[in-house]
Image (cartoon, rainbow, N blue to C red; front, side, top):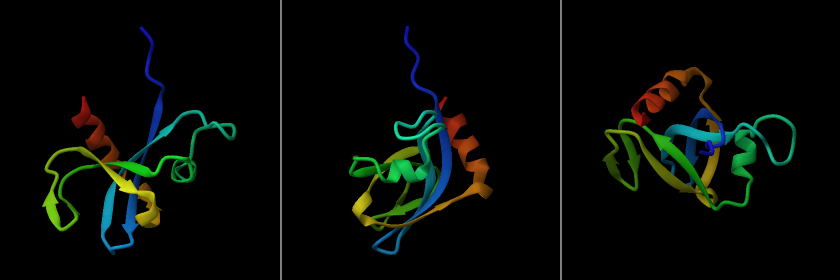
Length: 102
């Protein structure tokens, strides 16, 4: 049985061009295709994918809808992303999402 590639998780806050903010977790590969070491959030934002998958937990506002009482993955259009902040202080969010996915 083959194992899935290992991933790192990074808590982020994403600001969209609508002014909405999404807080969640971005998955990164342990090995980058372009440099030594793990993939960075910068790498994920600049890869060929048109959407950024973000795992969110708790209440999130997307498109004017309040929801997401559990962990779910949302796909944000990279064209709509204005800023991404790394949420190093929110390591607890990563732990909660990992526990809920098991």
